[in-house]
Amino acid sequence: MIESKMIVAINEQINAEFYSAYLYLSMASYFESKNLMGFANWMRVQAMEELTHARRFYAFLSSRSARIILTAIDAPPIEWTSPLHVFEEALEHEHKITASINSLMNLSMDLRDHAMTSFLQWFVTEQVEEESNVDAVIQSLKLVDNQAAGWFLLDKDLATRAFLPPVGLTI
Ligand code: FEO
Image (cartoon, rainbow, N blue to C red; front, side, top):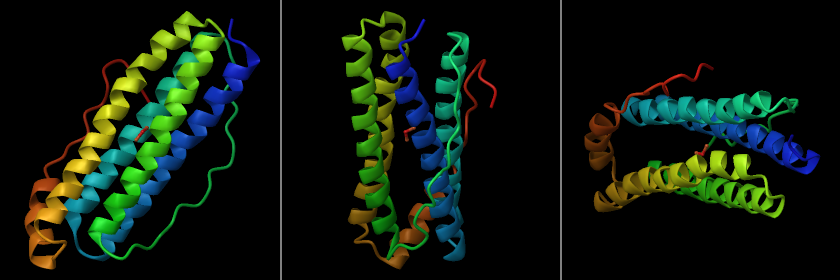
């Protein structure tokens, strides 16, 4: 049995994860419009990962007989000034998601919901990776001084990122 406060908070997180997918798809489309298809690939893979995050929350709520309430997803931004600007905004977004996961963790501990705390631990670890992945691209963009010649080199690297569907989790 999950406390209603916790159910509301997880439903909000499901919305945040779907918004993350929207945001990264919007970023992918921006890169496609600049013919930076490797950057676009990286963002599309990221969007897929966000859908699996939403699905993990959905599946967990469902397994504990709680109702999933889907709500409207805000429109994401559509324009940025450069690839560095895109990734800096992505990192800022991931910091917000990390803060919301930490709040969920605090709530589950306050409510002594041990099953939820254990479930959320995966997301605590995942957020470290999420921030680190985005920051790695930021550091590469800074190394090439955020210049077009460097973008094309990085584009080839980012084209190799592939989506690995989590075992046992369907969307
Ligand atoms: Fe679902 Fe990028 O955090």
